[in-house]
Length: 150
Image (tube, one colour):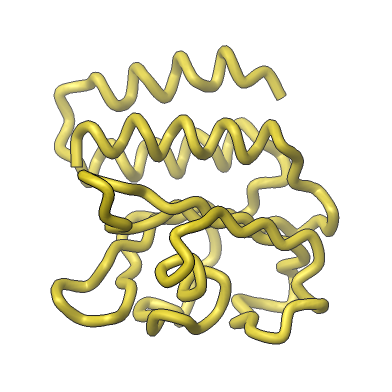
């Protein structure tokens, strides 16, 4: 993975004149197409004043998890902890919401605006033990860039 090239393209997407929703969708599509083990890429955002996340833009198989309560699953835990969560093997997680039998690992990175966790990027992979510090660094970069326009 060449993160420098990926970051340049992400910067171009974010700097485009498209609406926020189009930018988020373009990021999902780009990451899923460029990184072979990113099988589902999506954004969840806090659902108004409710203690839950709502699915926004995504690329990959449809999911029934359109609403996720805070604390439930990996995404819900990140909404509470405000920390990155890398799961190399989802079968070893007690508080995991299965998105499908193909999913073997997941990484979720929060997005902060003015110090508040407003959402997150969520990546599912059909490969176990696949995420590295490079993935975490790239996704943190994307979330930091997005925080400037959200």
